[in-house]
Length: 322
Image 1 (cartoon, rainbow, N blue to C red):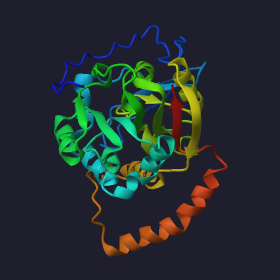
Image 2 (cartoon, rainbow, N blue to C red):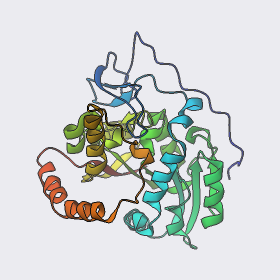
Image 3 (cartoon, rainbow, N blue to C red):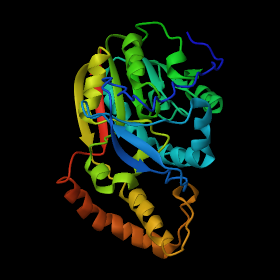
C-alpha cells in the first residue's frame, strides 16, 4: 500500500519579508506577536511569532528549512519525548476514544507515529495499523513492535490512495508541520466517508500561554511552526472539508517546565548558569524529590484551580469527520 523509501523533501517557500500572509486565511500584514529563543536547548537566537488579525492564527516567521530542522531536535529532545511516552497508560485515554469512535475497528493511520507507542495499543485482528514517521530508525521499531506498515518521509509525500482509512490520528504533531492546511486537505482525502480525524495539540489561547507568554513550554520554538486556538482549528478543518464532531480543551499547565525557564533567566542575571532543560535528568536527590512531591500535591493544585479563571485549557482535543 505504501513505499518504504524516504522521499526527497523540498524546503518550504521562503518568507516574503515585504508581504507576509496568514497560512490559514491568506490575510496580509500579520501582527508581530511574540519573540523568544529555544529555551529547551538553552539557545539564544530569537524567533518571531506572527498573529493574523483576521483569524487569530499564530505562526513562526521565517522558519528553518526542512533540511535544517533536524538540528533543532536531536538526541536530548528524542529522549525527553520517549520518556514521556514509555508508560502504556500514557496512551489509554487516546486508545479508548478511538474505540468509542470506531468500535468495529478498521484501518487506522497515525501521523508522526514515532516508535509506535499508540499504535501498539490497538494490536489485534480488528485493526490494520499504518503510520507516517520521519525517522527510519523509529519506523523500524514500529514495524517490529506491532507490525504496522510505516511510510518514512513527509506527510504530503505519502502515497496513500483516497478513502483508505477509518481513523486518522495526530497527537502533538500538527503544530510541527510546515503546511497545516494542506495536511488537513490530505487527511480529508485519505479518510473514508464517515471516517474520523482525532487530534491533540497545544492551545495558544490557553491560560498557560497567557500567563507564561514567551516562557510557555509548548511554544517549543522553532520546532512548533504553527500555534492553534480552537477557533483557528475549526476554521482550517472546515476549509479542508471536515465537519466538527467535538472540540474541547484540557487543563495541562506545563507549570514546572515553564517556571524552570523563568528561574533559569532570573539566576542568569546574577551570573549563575544552569544546564538547559534538555540536559536535565530525573536523578534529583531525595530531599528535592520530597519537596517536588509536596509542591505537586499543594501549590500546583491551587495554581491549576486558579488558572481556570484565566482562560481555557492548554491542550486542544478535537474530533472531525468526513
